[in-house]
Image (cartoon, rainbow, N blue to C red):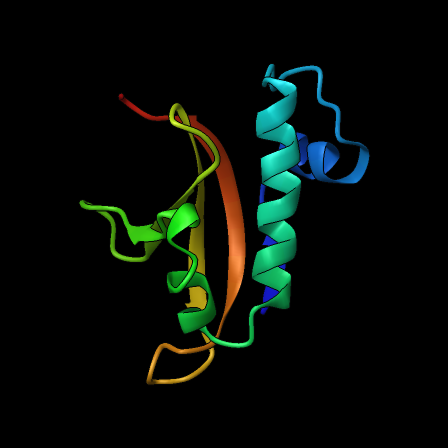
Length: 102
């Protein structure tokens, strides 16, 4: 799967593992980097759904927005541009890391 980053601070975090504006714990940054690698390594959407640790799910109230768990508090939000009608393969556009209620 292809990954694109739609946020300058998120892109900086991915490239350098540091960001001045995104104040995140080190474990969340490590999990973010590992999650991006998992997305890039996946051949179909089923590879990501099979990893229950990601808690990959569609967000309610959005047409094409999804999230993956980074920790109990943080989620990586993204949109997927599907490359086929079966919605098996797509381009992931990473939007933000958001806080999640516990």
